[in-house]
Each structure stands twice: as structure tokens, then as C-alpha cells.
Length: 386
Image (cartoon, rainbow, N blue to C red):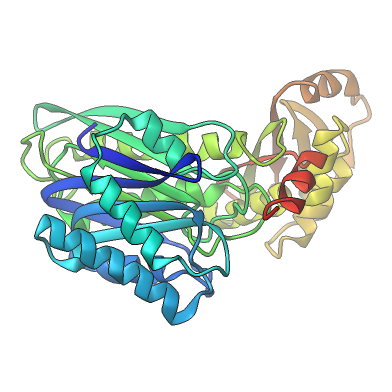
């Protein structure tokens, strides 16, 4: 991994991660569209435009969202403290927070945490990943490699997320680090495209967080000629590796959905466009009735029909086909006369579930990913602040 994280410890667990980045590191980011977003998101969205980063600070346990001027002052104090330590512009320090909404981040505690992190010995990436989690049940990381300009570059990433997952741009807190050299504008284009096909295709509970952030950092340590466009040597390979890392992380978040027991892939084909297919897929994936049916291992394809119909996208009842695990239950608006539910029932007893929908209207296609809805989700969120 091309950077060194450090963590400070508080209330019996690590709750702050500090990553120092090489001078000249390029940065790109995607952020929540939740209009009640945190000051961290507002400042990150503003500062990512200048294209360079020297540090990342992630606080877990307090989202610092819906905290007004006090929240913003706390973030700016962190940025000033770190920028003074590194001798870099304030806007090159990126801060994220995650946890309870509506509680201002204590400035004194934040200052002490930063001081401890700046003096701490470097930790490993496992510790950094565990530190940024909240209701996560396991640490989530991903890695990929690509050959760029004749050099092998590495992409490593960490992410947190388990609940309040329904991306409206990005999802949770995710950080990608690479030793490749890339111009910020091109890195931004690649991240935005990868996000659209990965993070923006997952949902756990249909709720878009106030703090969702995904940042990509390219240090340039590999020494390749900077990637500036798809005409650059190895640009295609790097873009594929970046999307691979994003997809790995997106899937891990869904698999760790609060209370989840099953990972569900919803594939929609025959739509009027890829975007329409994605919206239909998300309507299915966000349906509590569909998700509870899967939790109960019930092949209730009528609930899928309902979700397609409510999606607000072009659909024709008499062209619609529904299947589970590769077995069609209904084709072109009619239940199959020889439909055998036995293989579907067997499929639903597994942990990896697939739902197939063919709208029969066009060439649009998309896959979205979600999890089932169990009593565990209620238990976790009923006691979240306790």
C-alpha cells in the first residue's frame, strides 16, 4: 500500500485514523447528495476541486452532521492542525466522520486525538480498516494491480459501511490508494465512472447517509508517466483495476448489511436504457417485501412484479419475465405452466441469491446488489445510540 496510516485510541477502541500522503498526491472524490450533509462533506467536495492531497483524517463514532457552525469549526480546526504539522495548504487535508448524527464533534477531544495520531507509530491496514468502522462486523479491504506504462501499480482500498446504505453518488466511507501517477481530472473521471457501476448499484436499506464519501489518492510513487487520458499507456488497465476495487468493496458492504444473511444480485435486462434498468433494479432491491421474502426463502415472484411496476420506469406487464437462480417462474406476463418451484426453493436456501428480470423492451441492462431484511436489522438500529 502506498501510504502509512496511524491511529489513536479512545474509549477502549481506535476511533481516529490519520493517513499521511506524499507531496503531489492527486485526489478525486464522490460525495453524498443528501442535502443535510456534514461539514466534512461540504469541505471535501469544495477542496477536491484543487486536485491535490497531503493527508486524510477519519473519525468514527460521531458523524458531526447536522451540527451547524460548531461542526464546521471542528473540521476546520482539524485541517489547520494537520496542515500546520505537514506544512501544506489547509485544503489538502481531507476529513471524514461517521457515527451518530446531531452531536457536535468535541474540539478538544479531536485536537487530542490528532496529536496522538501524529506521534503514533504507523499501524497496519487491518487496524486502520477496523478503526473507521461503526456497526461493521468485519474489516473491509480490497486490492488490485495493473500494468501502467510498463510498470506494475497497486491499488489498495479500505471501506466502512453496513447500514444507512443507499448511494446517491457514493456510499459509506471508502478510500482508495494507489502508487500510480495520474492527473487529478482523469482520476476524477475514472472514479465517477466506476462509482456509477459499483457503489451506485448497491443498497441495504434505501437510506442515503449524510456523510457518504469515496476518495481516491494517487501518489505517483510507481514512477509511471502520469495518466492523463485513455490515450495514456495502461489507462484501460488502470481503469479496470479501479472499477474492480470499487466493486469488491461495494459487495463487501452489502454482505455486511446490518442483520443480513443473504447477498442478493438483481439483474435487469430488456430495459429501454442501462439507467432505466438500474432504477428498476434498485426498486426491487429496496422493496421490504422482496427483501423479507428472500429472508424467509419464499419464492414470491409477485413481489418482484410489484416492485417493477412501482419503479416509475417504462415496463409492460405482458412482456415481463421473472426468475430466481436461473429458473424462470414467469415469462412474458404469464406464470409458466410447467414451473417447478423445487430448484428455486433450493436456490433460496443458499447465501448468494440471484433475481432475474427481463422487461422485454430494449437493450438496457444493469445489475444491482442488496441483502435480505431480517430481525437483526431492527435490533441493531433500535439500539444504535444505547
